[in-house]
Image (cartoon, rainbow, N blue to C red; front, side):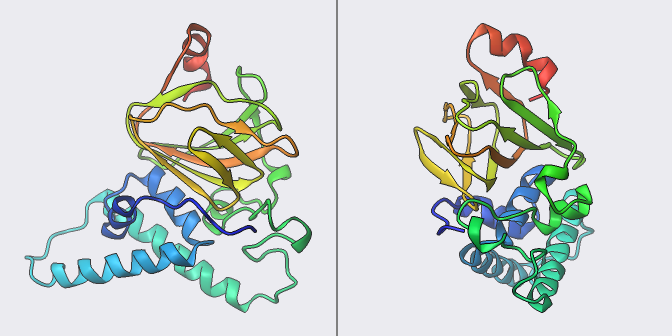
Length: 231
């Protein structure tokens, strides 16, 4: 896997550490942490700071959102411990085989627990009305989470965001006006960003997207099919 160039914003990592991100967004951050030691360090620092602040507060029951995010982080910590005990040659570890490691990070452990698969090709991809786009909708209970598969060389419709969107590249890559995004990178976007991701020519781009509100598509055709696509 190439060096990760794009990370979640600092505010996003602090919200994750505090357990205040919607579950769909927390899932994306949790999967990114599996591959990014820099962000793991930032989250640990946020958790440490939060722990110091909590000691000065009156105890209060965890919200359902905080409880869900905490359980996801515990799952991630367990997965990281398991990965360290697996032989380096085993493809079940967090990084794909060396011949494709620069373009693919594999199915993150948190997703394997939800999908019960270790291979992208074995997943039940569903075609959408948008050309060259397939998806798998993930039930997180809060926000929208989905795996997207954009065919090589295919563009997504131009869109902006009603809320926040986090997208983690898992295989292949795409480019837009914000730059080039490769496996392991995260696009952390809000309503101020309008873009049109274009998948690289050499392979399909597979990414995990989490949103707390539907997208805003530009153009009458994209708006017409949006209810059927579900984004």
